[in-house]
Length: 469
Image (tube, rainbow, N blue to C red; front, side):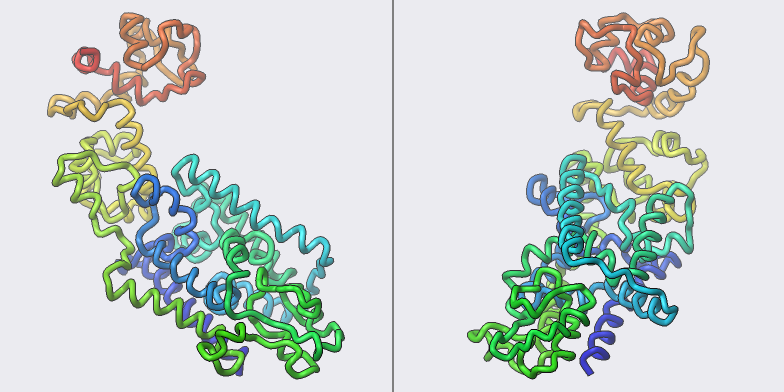
């Protein structure tokens, strides 16, 4: 009964993820797969606390899922990994497939296993360091959960996504030879759960007086753990209960809570991890009924910017917005957005950004980047006028074409810019915010100056004069 119940619960959590994945591709108006990723709460928590905003692709739903995972872990640490996580269920299925195909499993020595498990913590530290430093979800570009369950590889494959495909294939193939390959050695969320596992109420416990030290539990454990040693296994245990079912000494191994909790969590062994599942679901239901569960941001930041006549932060640009919405909230003209995104001038600016991803490979992150670069050029107190609509959108073409006998590229020097645009040296350095002693023979690329800045600042003489005042 226990294995069947666990599989049914896992399937119950996989189905909504599958619905979101398919519905997203078929335009059913469902959220992105990013919005239902609990690890997003870990990635975005720092920026939310410090800056008060969600990173791109993250929403309140991610924080709700993070809270739900926390509740489940505090009740029974292994319940999330072994009963709830869809990616863990997928790996379990691959393990069963490997048995049917008679693929010999790779047995990893315990000493090596313990060292490989540390890779999860290295992955977690690296992801957090990069995310906090860049305020971008760079890990999402190769996240196997997102790659597989987004179904982009099926509905919208792209050669540019080959690193994500390579990582996903590596993990899937590895799971055919090593049970739960990703969970054991690479999962950053598993590392967080492992840190919290000692606080868990429900664990596999051993009665030393009843244990015969036969080692059978160790041999049947799919996670290569050692329940017979008496040491806590909660750090890596998924509560599959293979050890308790095969133990020849009744009561030697049992899933239980501390004595003071046994009146709160009574019942059979399966009921205790099931309590963690109930706790997980209760958090989601409370969030749903209280309106906390949001998978699209509901436009709060957008309407706040409009009502207060403030610029919308690039990170608050969301997939439900259109290019027209972006223009209104940021001041960046639609023409400039189309030009920088490589879209034709006749493109319908009322199409939601999320639809651009499936039709043009332009992602919402690309729009955020264009707006962020625009903000670097035009300060907050700069007022965009109608006269600039036509001039700015043609600047890229003006500077890309020979102008006064030269062409500005990334390898062009400041001297080239002075010669082509006939701008005084002091004015150029001031416009680009460079020191007065900056060598003029340095290339724009070496100075970290993007061509878009040259195009927008020097493409129109009147614009130059307004910025210099």
